[in-house]
Image (cartoon, helix red, strand yellow):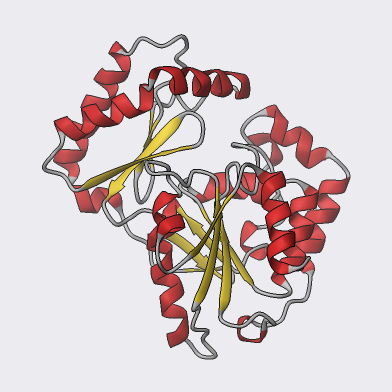
Length: 293
């Protein structure tokens, strides 16, 4: 992925900073113990992406990469995000360093697209689950709803089709950083996304869909059970592999951990130890405190 294709000038500027390539290259080339030989046994640490590892839709900091690299010497690490893999590559990797070299487990779209030590795992499809006719009805309703919606600003890409879900944004995913922040404030005051979700629930009660608010401008729609807990299925299978690890301790760090947020299900799942964070700086502080770094 060329730098010129990264969304937003902020990503280009960040990748151009001299300290960033050094930090990301060091993290990618560090010699690591095999998963079954990590010092903290039977343990994996998972992270949300936006507002946990990075500011929303922006690039990871060199300091975060260095800390994650140090953590990875002690324990297996992974991320689980709702966005598609290309966006996570933009935020966490670089033009020459695949994000799959920086984490042991990469779970895009809640784990419906997944990588283990750089190797892709089996994927699942939202369109096969819902069917073409129901999907067209969903798209038609969403676009009509957005057209009639009265909000201060509308941009483009109101519905984004992904492998395991659709992402719906009332303002549009092409909004600038400032427009995203302004919409998020407006949404908190007027409940734009919760009202949109309620309208979808009333229109499609026969579909077993989950609606999950994440980030500043959008919400995800996916089959019930395909939330972030889906990635735990991949981790449960680890013990069946050669030199496999039975991950009996799973830490999860995320920011949208209250009910309705897209981190809630995995944060509150009895299989995980949940850590609620208030941004990347808080994530770093909690990592250091929890793991003695």
